Structures are given as C-alpha cells and as structure tokens.
Image (cartoon, rainbow, N blue to C red; front, side, top):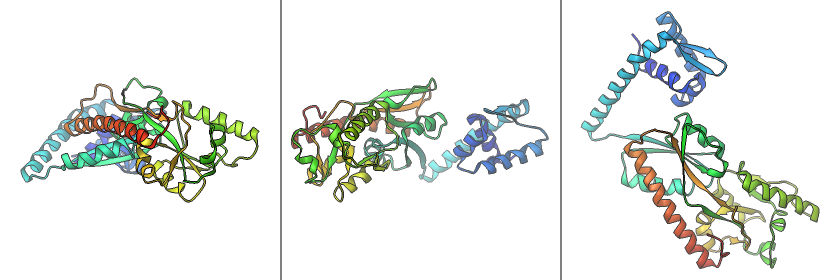
Length: 323
C-alpha cells in the first residue's frame, strides 16, 4: 500500500517531467525525491518512470498508478477542504512571483489589499530575476508572474497580458554635482557610480552601454559599471543619501523620497527609461477564486499607480514626458 506522500511524489514527477523540477515543486531536496521514487519502485517491483537526458517518461506501470493516484489525492484534498470549512478556518496558499521593481510596487500593492479582503489566503510573494519569472510559471511554482515584457521572448505555454507602463527616472542625492549641470546628458550620468539590477531588457541595456562608452572616451568616469548590482530598487534608494551613486527607479517607488526631498530626479528622460509590466499565466489554465482576486487587484494597482505617477510628475515639475 502506498502512502499519500508517495502518491504526491509520483504525481509531481509526472506533472513536472523531471526529478529536479518535482523536488522544487515539493520543496524538498532532489536526493529525497530520488530515494523516495526508488523505494516505491522497489516495492512495486518495476520502474514508474524512464530517465532520459531531457527528464522523465512515464511507463505503463507508472500510468496505472497515476490513474488512481490523482483520484485519491483529489478526494483527500476535498476532505481537507470540507474539514477546514467545518472548523471555519480554511486557509489557502497563493504563490506569486515578480521581477525587480514590480515585486516592490504592483505586487506589494495588490498583496496589501489581498490580506484585508481575503484573510484566509496565505500569500507567498517571491522576488526574482526577470529571467526566472516565466520559468516559475511554466513549472507551476506560481500561477501568476509579473515581469517587464520587453525581456520576455514568448512561450506557447504562457499567456501574457500587458499593463500600463511605469515611468522611470534617474535619481541622486540633493546637492549632487549632476544637479548643477544645466542640460545633463546620459553620457554625463553614466560617468558616475551607477546602481542597477542584474538583468535588464536589451532596450535598456544598449543605450546605457553606449553612453558608458561615450563617457569613457570623454575622460574621467567611475571604473566599475554598474558600481553595485542589487535586485531591490528600494534598497538602492537607501544608498543615495550617503553617496554619489545614480539610481534608476520608477516614479512610484521613488514617490515618498522625492516628495520629502531625500532624492532629486535628474532632468533627463527617454521613453526606454520605464518598466513595461506584464502578467504571465499558464495558457488555458482556469484561475481559482484567490488567483482571480489577486489578478483584479493587480489591475487596480496598475491604474492607481499610473495616476499617482502623473500627479508626482506635475507636482515636482519633472520632465513633461515623465508619464
């Protein structure tokens, strides 16, 4: 007789197509998955999966076990739901993965409202490199992912929904030498220590690299580029007051610091200095109540963020193309 945890292991391997991805989904070490599968196969006296260079293939024996395993697990999940409802303490888990900037703006704004409106939903918000978001959704680590769509190459298994762009700015400390330059250029900005995320879309990287080369030809510049790599723009903002760094940040994330005079926006803008947020989900996957609620809250947060950015730009006299 197989135990419930063993049935979950078998189903996870079949759904994810490899022992490594199954271990990630189950939150255990790959060695534990390997040992658990070996023990089950020894008990059943036959292989459930064939190992290949690209993952696993389910055998006839494996398909026979899976036919009943899913039904048993569905019944167990149903019973757990009924028991939780009877106790009045049903808690559901919702995993969301978001890339830099969006994890600390749209995702957090939606999460704060979700906790109030749906107290029985336990949120797990993961901040990830842009490149990891699509993989996490594809491998069912999260039903929804947020990223800059300019860095998304597309995938037949995923649906992408574009949201309104989030304008970005370069900010420095009050009194920074760049604030004294009448018509500051990107070349002059790139000569200073720059703080940026580890990976950005090509549309953003290319102009920065070109300006950096122009700064090199012009003479003095900070030797390291970027001077600091960090995936959290709000952490980067904390460095501005105590150094001469330049930080690229969205208007919404810099709003409080701009209004309180802790940072100053440089009067230089270009259309590519922005985030183009998008929501990824599995193609054809029907969202549950909690997932749909979070999606709706993302839409609301996106619209409100756009209005706030417009207000801040007008209030502080930022460049006319700020929004």
